Image (cartoon, rainbow, N blue to C red; front, side, top):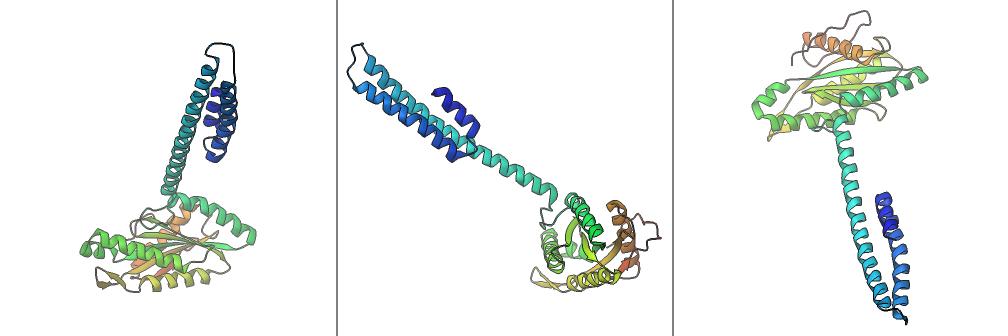
Amino acid sequence: MFTFGAGVVSRTSSRLRLCMASVILAVLPTVAAMLAHAASDHAERFHSEFFLLEAFLLIAVGLMSLQSAAHLYVSAVEHLSTKQDMAKLARYDPLTGLPNRLLVREAFQELFSFSRRSHSQLAIHYVDLDGFKAVNDRYGHPAGDQLLVEVASRLTAIIRSADLVCRLGGDEFLIIQSDIRHRDQAELLARRVIKQVGEPYEIEGAAVRITASIGVAMVPECGIELDRLIACADGALYMSKAQGKAQVMLCDPDDEPIHGRAVA
C-alpha cells in the first residue's frame, strides 16, 4: 500500500484531483478493514494492537502523500507558468506587448504561405518615428516609454486581424500587411499610419507631436526572404527620410537594398 501510494503521487501529481481520489480510495478501505480486524477478538498477543498501529501509520502516510501531491502540483504549475512566461518574453516585446523579431519570423512564413495559396501579396512596412529622440531627451525615458506604448496601441488599432505589427527595437516598428491585390493598398495603409501616429499625444501634461516615416517592400516583388525584405524596406525608409519627415516610399524591386539606418 505504501509503494502504491508513492507511485500514484509520483505519476499523477500533475492531475491533483485524480491523485487525491486514488490515494483516498486506496487508503480508507484498507484502514477501515484494519480497524475492524483490530476490534475483533484474537488469541495472539498484541495482534489487535499491531493492526491498530498499522491503521494509524497508514493514515499518517496517506495524509503525507496528499500533502506531497499538493506540493508537487503547485511546483509543476509554477514551473509551467514560468516556462510559459519565458516563452512569451522570448517572442514579445516586454514594453509594448507587441511581437518581436523572433515571432515575426515565425508569422511571416505562415502569412507568406497563405498569400501564395490566395494568389495575393504581402507588404513589409518599416516604420520609424521622427522626433522621438527629442521627446525622450526633453521629458525623460519613462515618458518616452509611455509614448512608445501609445504608438503601439495606435498601430494595433489600424491594422486588420490578419495583419501583424511588431516592435523591432527603439522607435522602430514593422507591419506585415497581408492579402494585398494592388500596391496602392500598401501605400494607403502607410498613409493611414502616418496620419494616426502624427496625432498629438499627452505626455507629462503636455501635448506632444511626432511623425512617422515609412519604407515599404512588396512580397514577392522584392523577394521572399524576410531579411532581404526588411533591408529593402529599410532602404526605402532611408530614402523617404531624405525627402522629409512623414513620408512613405515603396521599394523598387530593381534597387539593391541600402544597408544603413535612417536618422530620426
